[in-house]
Length: 92
Image (cartoon, rainbow, N blue to C red; front, side, top):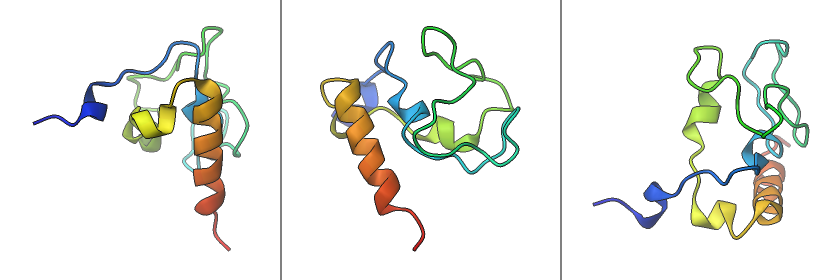
């Protein structure tokens, strides 16, 4: 049985998960990943991933799926949720 969150799709024009968290994996143009809070440079004007489906896309990007608790009712909620998660998981 699928959980309610498994059917959730990305919200157009959001890209919070491509902005709020840091990415430590290398990607084209960023051999050391990207810092938290920086929009991924591989987003297009519509905030869609230009690396989607390509082997250069970091594995972590494909592992973060939309979920009601993370995405909430808008981009602002998602940015706040992901920023809190980023801070809570930073090494001390």
